[in-house]
Length: 279
Ligand code: KIV
Image (cartoon, rainbow, N blue to C red):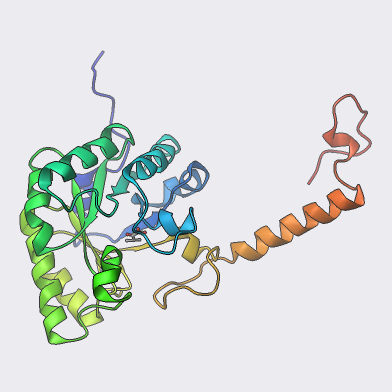
């Protein structure tokens, strides 16, 4: 028997080959439950460093660790069989040197089961991207608004709104392509700049707040499912209002527990059920 199992997941070369053919659909996930529900519909799932905020209630993305991302990546990888699994490199896990980046990225592939990693940075990170790619680690780059730069940017600011940042985002996108990234996330980038980058690059652009001209889109799942409060960025479209459903279900449960209406005999062992088991 061959040691090579038949490949069922969307692969990095397949994602790259989508350029100019069809759009790439991606979302974030950090739990096996959500990843499993999303698996058949998406091309890739990102275990984003936004997990720091949506799973741990932290104020920004800066303090999640490689070990935490690896554990969440493993949960997503176990629960999926179709999507390409992309793990985000946490702040301070790759900026120091290409060697540091390699060690942590390799850990996300070996311990987390990721198929690829994502890291923030353009021209500055290009040597690191090349170091990783030439050693077998596929890289999804991330330029434009880079949330790990929140302190140097003084907030989350759309990029490309003036000539200087427009030129910088373009230079960053071209640099990561040259370095070997298989695709690039454009976050918070002005529409015409995102369009220009998308037509210039031979690799797919994945937009988040960067318009429909990108080759694909990604959102934070909690934002698009309405699980993250009202305070979401303007580029988020809410496809569901799960928070209301969850609150309603939990309220009904608590009311029934307090009223002694749950559990019923059908939910108990050794008691003859008086009604069919329906919800
Ligand atoms: O961490 C994250 O969720 C991201 C976005 C691109 C969705 O980096």
